[in-house]
Amino acid sequence: MTNTVTIEVKRLPHGEGLPLPKYETSDSAGMDLYAALADGERVTLGPLQRAMIPTGLAMALPHRHEAQIRPRSGLAAKNGITCLNTPGTIDADYRGEVKVILVNLSNDPFTIERGMRIAQMVIAPVTQGTWAEVSELGATERGEGGFGSTGTR
Ligand SMILES: O=c1ccn([C@H]2C[C@H](O)[C@@H](COP(=O)(O)OP(=O)(O)OP(=O)(O)O)O2)c(=O)[nH]1
Ligand SMILES: [Mg+2]
Picture (cartoon, rainbow, N blue to C red):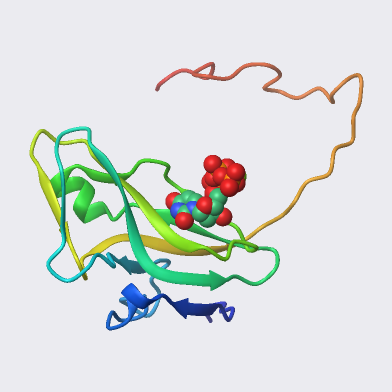
């Protein structure tokens, strides 16, 4: 059974008329976010250009949850479009508009219009950490090895 939590959502004026994000299939992890640009407005990203795209939504996530804004693989594979700060973090206490920072990593311009599904949002539980300061950390098999220390094959 899929876990669900209820998310309060407020449509901002420029979000009116767009559907609320939804899961495209029954077991999808992410809901696709729509670009809430004005009717007829176009944002064209040239190579390596970025833009913050409005979603027209503000939300109140449940305590101890976050939303992760992730790229859509189709846009990445076909058009080189990804989220610059992936995964973007939406904090549970954020009440502003959710925005998507897109960047064009291809050599061709890419145009975004109202209603395009530009990214996806995954809801995830959050664990906060508290520090326990020590003078020595416990020994492990890995130790300080990292960054390829185990080889490539
Ligand atoms: O892709 C994103 C990333 C963040 N946010 C919003 C929600 C998030 O709760 C807030 C802060 O994000 P973050 O902590 O990543 O940014 P910051 O640069 O650390 O800003 P702040 O100082 O406001 O925390 O900005 C978005 O709308 N889209
Ligand atoms: Mg922050």
